[in-house]
Image (cartoon, rainbow, N blue to C red; front, side, top):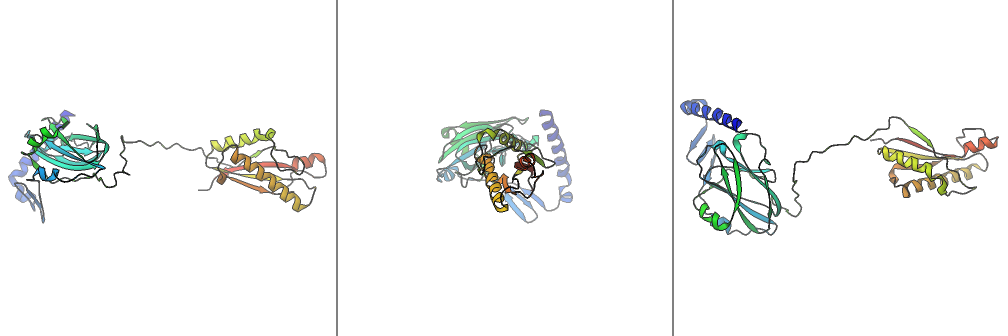
Length: 320
């Protein structure tokens, strides 16, 4: 990384030297005069003289903390300017002998200083966690070696104030730290990699014969028959994007209306067990009683009528 920084510095210094010979003809509309910077009609100051005491006299909100970053007058090139970040949000590229002020939310804050010349935009490369109390001001001194090694050190106000008297306020910062509504702002401690688990998809309709038998003219599911309902619940849990329709059927004995009502009461009973006992969401369960309308065997024999008295579960993928 050090070699990369050194190469970047050489690569940048050389073009600057070349531009110094013929900048008037190669780059029109740019003018740098002392602290002033101008591109066409836009003018701004790189740094300004500011009384730090005036800034510190301003009251800090109870849920915010004021942070003052200062850098030593080390005389290194702008490629060793320090990218100051708070909670992975860029604050400023701090030059030698300058300081800057920012307010952030109270609580745990991640602060970092990383050389601009590395050009990797890694705002968490040299981060340190600090616990900040509301309505307080904190001072941090930034040191940067010639090779771009950064150090961020918290210092006391007694040490900081004499140093700040000899420094200028860096005004060309782009703050992305927004302390408004600090009580609702949540900082992410580390970049989170979200892994989306692929849910299994049911490619075709599945029918399960629940083999639930009822007493004559009754619609209560006896616990003896829970084992088949358990299988259905487990299957639906394995395929979480499915829905089920519980279908109830009777034989032909009794009137059509009676059989329709009986079959509906029985599937409603199975549905209730599935929801209340096995925690399948109600919106994934439908129940339809068909009465005697869909026999699968002849009602002329006892064996055929037994086959027609059935409860089945039809499971399929839910429509998006």
